[in-house]
Image (cartoon, rainbow, N blue to C red; front, top):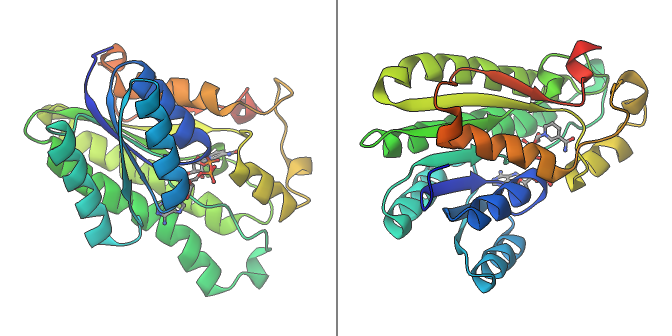
Length: 247
Ligand SMILES: NC(=O)c1ccc[n+]([C@@H]2O[C@H](COP(=O)([O-])OP(=O)(O)OC[C@H]3O[C@@H](n4cnc5c(N)ncnc54)[C@H](O)[C@@H]3O)[C@@H](O)[C@H]2O)c1
């Protein structure tokens, strides 16, 4: 893995993004933690610096283009460019059946998970054009499964795969790799909220390995995808889901 590269992690204050930020820093990268949760993001950046790592927190709302643009610019200025991005900012489904789903619920979920992903890729790729780089978009096993009470979430995560496929084809010749990572159930605050708000969800999922992932297990795959160890991987939809995709 290349060391001392500048990597931005959206949604870096919690769950999978938090685990990825810690792992990246421990491997010598300069990490920009971008999140709307200012207190948690600042605390994590301080904890990384306390253990000798390089970390900066920047507030961002991925729905807002000016906010995303400013966050990327701060990462570039602080860490002399941008070489990688792990996009983990996301929200869960409302837990309603489709005929009861409000358009506002749809807009909220897709606005963060899909429009937000588009804005992040747009500005991260622009920043990587001079020197190349690698981008990871966290999609979900939900993109390729039929999950009850989750239409807006499944649609947003399937959209991320289309976005990644197109972007990977566009930028392969410019030295920028773009991949989708599809976690299955992962023990994070999002998963806890998701199960609480959608009690029938668990009954519709089968995980051959019989347990949730830890955030570290998903982060390890994301960090691999932004490292030079995955130098020939682009446009992939990598399932890290304990076998859920094959059920
Ligand atoms: N946990 C799972 O089971 C699971 C499974 C598959 C995919 N995922 C995906 O992984 C990603 C990370 O999820 P997690 O489980 O770590 O959740 P989490 O709730 O622990 O972390 C998500 C982070 O995103 C941030 N965020 C939310 N909206 C934002 C916005 N508008 N702007 C900036 N930051 C915002 C939150 O503040 C939070 O820090 C999400 O995209 C999620 O959909 C999670």
